[in-house]
Image (tube, rainbow, N blue to C red):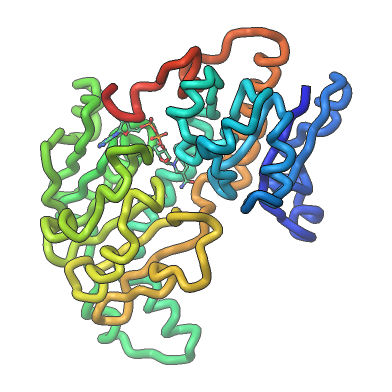
Length: 353
Ligand code: NAD
């Protein structure tokens, strides 16, 4: 079998730190194991354009392993070229970089390491909420500059206590965010999701299910697919509470980048934070690298790393190996890992179908 993996280049850092498993240097720890089993492993970070290693090597690959952090975009056109492709493994959570409908038509299995980094992301969401609400980034920048003007920071710093926080999506990450917010004594914890939480789970965090979100803080924790692409746009942003904070660690393309920038600049949003970008790596001139609110703060954007802590990398590398091993041994996959299989959606989280 030929296994192709598209990972990011970690350079000397990844050579010095072998726990950076999601890099082309450390290859998810698969090299010796796959070679001992007589299979071929091709690893590259070169993923854009017809002349890229990815597009050349996919033509006869049996298995493709990708990550959401340096996504190889597996379009319908690429699937049509990949004549031998039977399995796409996402080392991580979120397989929107694969055209799932095209995979279904070709009966390609798409599996991901469900749950592998959900705590990592939930922690990042709570951190992002706090750094926006408390106006942390401009405060730190002021200190680095050598300045000290407390009023310039305090004029836009608040407590999280007594605020209304809502999550779009209350699955593994969304629910863990709600759990972690309980001790902050928020006024209300709300969730918007077509899948209802079990009653005891909702009660345990005091969360109410709502049909629309009118919140101080909105956190996005649903997958990217047809009906969530551009869900946050000029029109929906008008219905946000004036001065709300928005955290997106789900997927960049759920938010219209220019609409978010305009909302920040007008003060309709007081802050935007997260780690996901519509196309990654984000271009240097991406508007959300530098967009600010009228008081010069409100931007907590970082590169896509919330779900790729060293703890998470260990879990998703082991999980990707398990999926691959099951496939090579002809064993059934763990049901929760399967996104599409046998010509159909198996997961219930990519929309009501
Ligand atoms: P999950 O499947 O456990 O939960 C997703 C929830 O979203 C489900 O309850 C589903 O019903 C809900 N949902 C789907 N469409 C919706 C819609 N239109 N409106 C409201 N809710 C909707 O998934 P998860 O493990 O919680 O992960 C969620 C997403 O987070 C992933 O799909 C991925 O895009 C993203 N993610 C990001 C990182 C990162 O590093 N930033 C890491 C892991 C996952």
